[in-house]
Image (cartoon, rainbow, N blue to C red; front, side, top):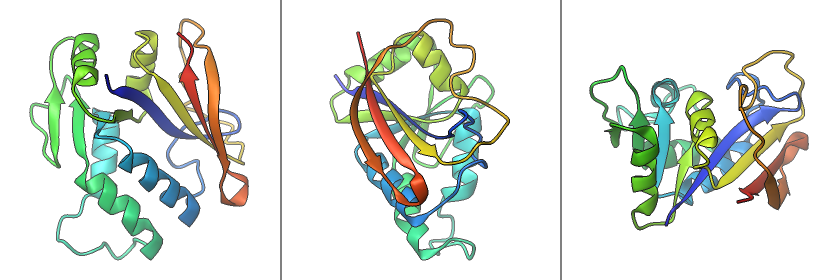
Amino acid sequence: MRTLRYCINITLDGCCDHQAGQPSEALHRYHAESLARADALLFGRVTYEMMESAWRWRSGARPEWMADWMEPFSRTIDAAKKYVVSSTLDRVDWNAELVLGDLGQAVQKLKREPGKELLVGGVKLPLALAEMGLIDEYEFVVQPRLAGHGPTLLAGLSKYVDLKLVSHQELDSGMVAMRYEAKR
């Protein structure tokens, strides 16, 4: 059975707004390696559209705004298989397919498929998956910053999820990546 891993950047005060973090070469390298460990990505509509607008290679040439050190991450996410959970989209592309029907059953089916692992990102979809007990690993890259605003990590979770630290890695500028397994 494939593992479902939730990966997200957060500030020290729990903010997971994608604009609250500090991009760096080490951070992008870390996330490129993290993405490469997964067979497929699982996104909600908002995260899918945000990632597609930023990282999709449309013309075959790197966008002018992109630094050289961002390219490995960009190429990795661009090429990855994606599953998109949405009640408003009727079609997707960018190596993606829609997840239809009951969310819990659909994710269980994806997890039963052969392969390495699934990686989920975003805010709302991971909350729903955590509520159902479907996330096997949590990976947080903690930024040395206080944002003072939200959204905050898993806000509204109705029950505790106990975790066991399985690895940690210090990145540049005081960032720390921590990976936890969900205790069952």
